[in-house]
Amino acid sequence: MKKEFSVMPDKLANEQFYGFNWFEHLTAVPSPLTLVTGYKLNGRSNGTMQSWLSFSSDNGSDFYCIFSYVCKYTHMYEIASKQKQLVINFPSADNYKKCYSTIANNSYEEDELEKAGLKFKKGTMVNAPVVEDCFLNLECEYVWEKEITPNSDHVVLCVKVVNVHVDEESLKNDRYGEKGFLYNIHSPLDPATLERKSTALGVITPYKTYEELF
Ligand SMILES: Cc1cc2nc3c(=O)[nH]c(=O)nc-3n(C[C@H](O)[C@H](O)[C@H](O)COP(=O)(O)O)c2cc1C
Image (tube, rainbow, N blue to C red):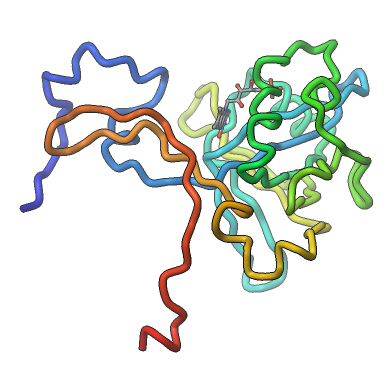
């Protein structure tokens, strides 16, 4: 049986949601995990974990990433809005901890990617670091941003993909599974019990091709 929710149940009144809405945990839609990189204004490398994002084309003319929840107080936002160039890197299970460690080493003075032990080189088309440990890297240029609501401290940010690096191994059908894309399963809330589980890393297993399905 389906349950409907519009008002937060009393049982959740003392839960900590850390700036997220409880619907986020109730719906528990997984989102892709990325490490967004750029150079800070002092030239040192920066890494930011980003998970609230998706991709689209514009009638086939160009390919865009729409970040749906970028905090204005991050180095990433400063880099995106001032340098207008960044790289979206896709971690896999074997290097996720290194990518994640950029959060702990987040001072302006730090060369975050070096400190994390990640290998990187300057992009071909943009002045931002490409993380070699990651199997897919998208060099991007800033297009536009908009506050989610007026005066919000988060923006929706659109960037255009201008160059793609892809590890040939990952084309051998293991972009999915443990060597491939990771998903953020953000502390899902059980609709029956209203208990929350820990945040988890997800991988995708292809189910059936369209030929098999139809
Ligand atoms: C799994 C994960 C996903 C995240 N996704 C986002 C996101 O989509 N938007 C955002 O503003 N912060 C996100 N964060 C938080 C930033 O990564 C964090 O604030 C980071 O320290 C900012 O780094 P910076 O100041 O070097 O840009 C995420 C963190 C984690 C662990």
